[in-house]
Length: 166
Image (cartoon, rainbow, N blue to C red; front, side, top):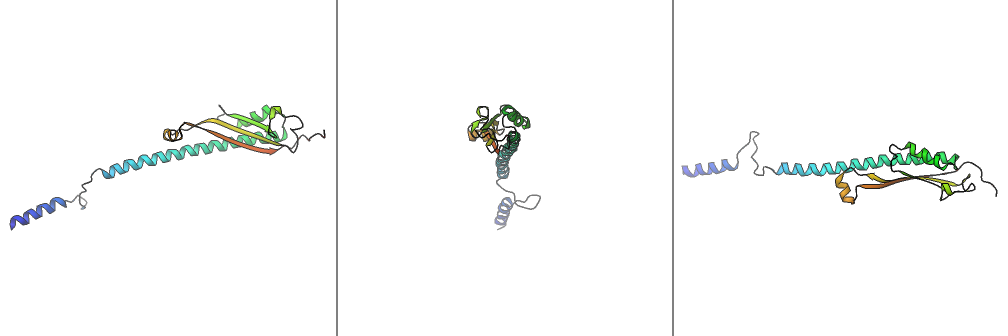
């Protein structure tokens, strides 16, 4: 009888050992650490993707502002095609590799006639960055390439000079 009590006490004490805090010891020692490691990796990938998208949005806003600056200049000076493009390029923080397209009524600014580049016609300035880099390697491997094309376009109505009657 004493032997059975001792055996029962020994088995119970072995299964319900207590830690310093008073709770039972878990038999799944590394599970929490593994869950934390997997969770942190996933959270960092999502965070890096959000940072990349934020960079893209920030750069796009700058491109749109540059297109708007070129359009505002072109509204009053529609015949100065290179100055319109330079005005837009000077606004960009990094104009390397950026293409600027200026169109008057759908025709390239350089090919537009004086009768097309006059009051009441549309001028459209488009800023294109064909190789905006994605810094997050995982996002690039999901998309299949590590650069995206960003395009911002602004249009306005030419204010002067007045169109000739003929």
